[in-house]
Length: 286
Image (cartoon, rainbow, N blue to C red; front, top):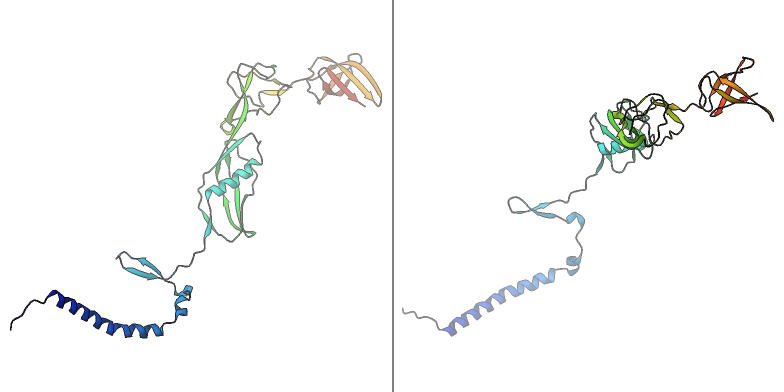
C-alpha cells in the first residue's frame, strides 16, 4: 500500500476536527458543574478556625500549620531596676549638687513578674554607707501589694562632692578663706576623714592646726572662731527687765558666740557665768 504525505489543507482540517470533538466532550461537563455551584458560598468569608498557615519547610515542600496562640509575656526585674531603686533611696539623703554611683557586688538574678500585675521595688534601709563606702541595704519587691521577693545586697558606693582643698600652708589661728583654699571634686569615701563641702561658710572658723598645701580641709582642722579668749577682759552687760548694767570682767575660758563661759569680777574676785554674744562681749541674763 502506498502512503503519501498529507497536504497542508488536510492538516488544518484534522486540527479543526480534533478541537470540535474536544468541545463536544467538555462543554456539557462544565455546564453541569456550574449549575451546582452556589455564588453566595464562594463570597462567604472563611472562619478563623478554617485558616491555615502555609510555610515552606526545610525540604522545600509547603507545610500546613495551625495558627500559634500568643504567649503571655513577663516583666524581668533586672539589675538596672535594682540600681535605680538604690539610687532613689540614696539621693534622698545627699545634696542636689552631689553625684552618687552604686555598684551591686553580691550578684543579681533577674526575677519574672506577669505583665498584668502591679509591682514596686524599694529599699527599706536608710542610706548609711560606712567610711569606706560599703552599704548592705534590704531590697523589697511587692507584687499586687504582697511581698514577693527580698534581697540583702552588698554594694559599693561612690559619692562625688565639691569640697575645700588648701592652696597654701594654713597655720593655727588663720581663717580658712580664699586664696588659701579652693573647691575641688572628690569621692569622699576615698578619704579617711570626709572633707568639708563648699556649701559650708567658713568665715567664722579658724584653723586649730597647721595644714600643708594640697590637702583636703576637714572638721578636725578647724573650729568656730573664738569670740573671747581666756584671760581677756571683755564688756559684760547685765540685763534685768528693762534695766541694763555694763561692767568689765575677765574671761576664765575661751568661748565662741552663743557659748556659756565663766567670768571673774576683778574687783570682788567673784565668778559668774555669761553667754558670749559678740567678739569681746558677754551678756548675763537675770
